Amino acid sequence: MASRAKIDERGRLHIPTAERERASIPLDSDVLVVPKSPGHIELILVGEARLEQFQKNIRGRLKHWKEEEHRADKALAELTTKQKHAR
Image (cartoon, rainbow, N blue to C red):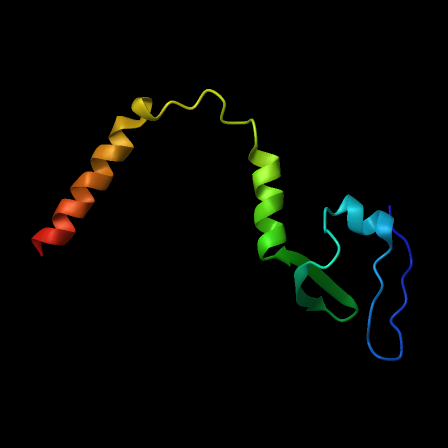
């Protein structure tokens, strides 16, 4: 769904609350403004709010993660570290 917004005489754009909430962009957030084509911009949430959104989305999804099952990752990291120190 879409709604109309207006750019005021100072160049400010008010994003309607419903659209902002559906996009999970909290108030007082930093956004990256990316011009895509004439008349088309993209807003990308950046900074702390984006990290908080990621943490909220990922919370509870790694319940069954067991570090000991990822020995290969650990071994590779150790090998890489040893090779860096050998140089």
